[in-house]
Image 1 (cartoon, helix red, strand yellow):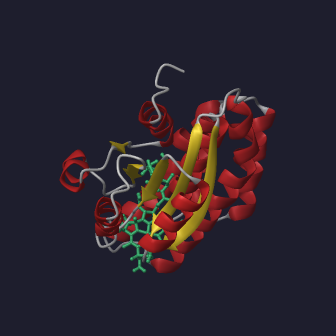
Image 2 (cartoon, rainbow, N blue to C red):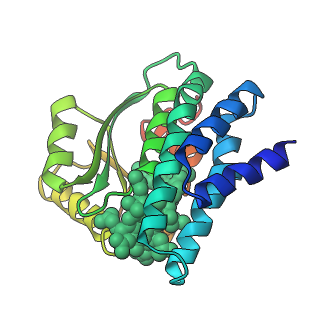
Length: 218
Ligand code: B1M
């Protein structure tokens, strides 16, 4: 039953059908499916497939856009369920989250933000295409302990380094820790830019964020 639903979920993303993706997300809730399973075993399979096809020149921009929209529609339905998962008790810390300048990929970043909120972090999600000064300015304004940056393009991941360099220049580390992520980000890159934390996925991001605020045991 679940396997069949996962396949339908992947297929509706490949088809770029937002109505069906939202409907299947609602169905998964009715069936008490874990929302992260719906995302990672269902919808993400479809968006990765389209991404691969696009990379090979076998799918084109409109298909990528539609797959992205369908993915967003599903995640929007599942977001309240993800938030319920945490039943956060204690305030863990403040995080400013953004996709870096020049990059408009938002789905993974939003997912990370939702999981952090569910786990007790106060998250200010600045959205996509955010320049270094805005990210740092917001972190100072709300006295954030963590800046989280997502980058999905090899051409924009350098922006993560710019923010870290700026923080260093202003003497703002280690007061503000930096966590990075996104499909092209590797451990080598994280070491190179001297980020404080990195995760491949949203669940891992919560663990890293807790470690960064010294609450790794909670
Ligand atoms: Co874009 N795109 N895209 N795209 N797109 C990729 C990234 C690409 C790999 C596709 C490909 O060619 N195979 C490729 C990048 C190649 C490269 O740089 N090496 C690419 C390209 C080329 C482009 C354009 C340049 C295409 C063009 O215009 N010619 C363009 C760039 C626009 C821009 O940003 N300036 C573009 C545009 C788009 C859309 C707008 C159409 C759409 C985004 C829609 C949206 O977000 N609203 C889109 C999509 C959907 C994708 C793919 C298919 C899927 C991305 C996604 O949402 N994945 C993607 C291929 C792929 O990644 N397989 C692709 C699902 C999401 C849940 O995963 O975002 O990886 P992800 O997030 C994960 C982890 O990475 C991690 O946790 C998340 C949850 O598990 N994570 C973090 C993410 N951020 C984190 C932060 C953390 C910690 C963990 O701490 C702070």
